[in-house]
Image (cartoon, rainbow, N blue to C red; front, side, top):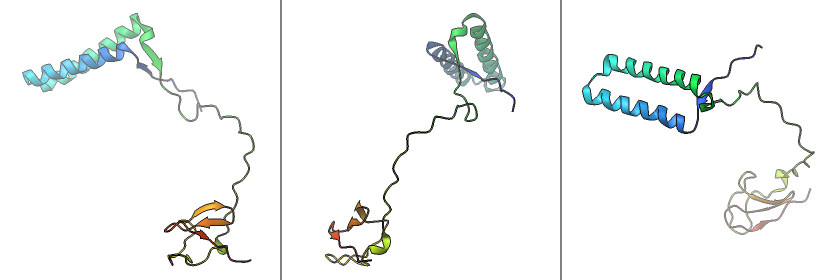
Length: 129
């Protein structure tokens, strides 16, 4: 794939100047009712201002963020120990304290083989293997 030319965007006070030109221009167009072809004139003024800024104040622009294929791949992180596997088959079908149905995705796991009821917070006794 070929390298694409990155676009440059206005930064800092130059961007504020560009915004002010647009806001003032739109206000004049609304006040006078010159929507057509006034909007085309406003676009032309905007392009001319950007061209003049690029010619006389190149520091007013900076490159846009690189795309996903231009970003270098980060180095792999150190080995992270795997999360303990929750043993859903050891959960009781209902809470012994409140009688609520127990679902593995709703309980609060406090360890790899211990969980609390999501309704009353009681510690659930795990079934024997």
